[in-house]
Length: 98
Image (cartoon, rainbow, N blue to C red; front, side, top):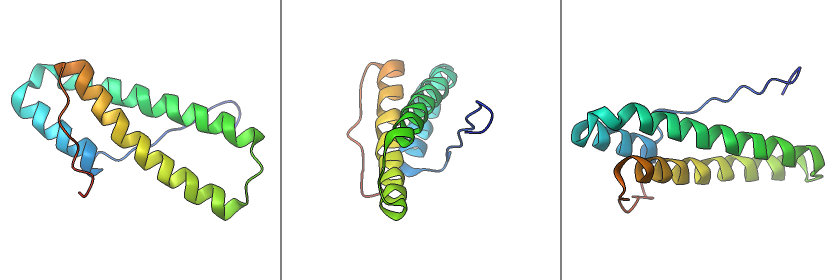
């Protein structure tokens, strides 16, 4: 975060996100925009929480970076599930192995 601005990037090819995106685009195209916005909201929220945590955390740099990477993947999976649930009212069981 520089000058009070946090820039958040996310991958549109991350398998759990892409799987749900593709399914919604086929089954309910009109809900696709809401799915994307809900997913982006969840990712932004998580990034803000991580930024807050980083200000008070004193972990070793390598350990902290590994934890953040794993936490971002976990949150991306949960975000895609939550976004899908909010759009469709149902949740598919995620394929974590992808």
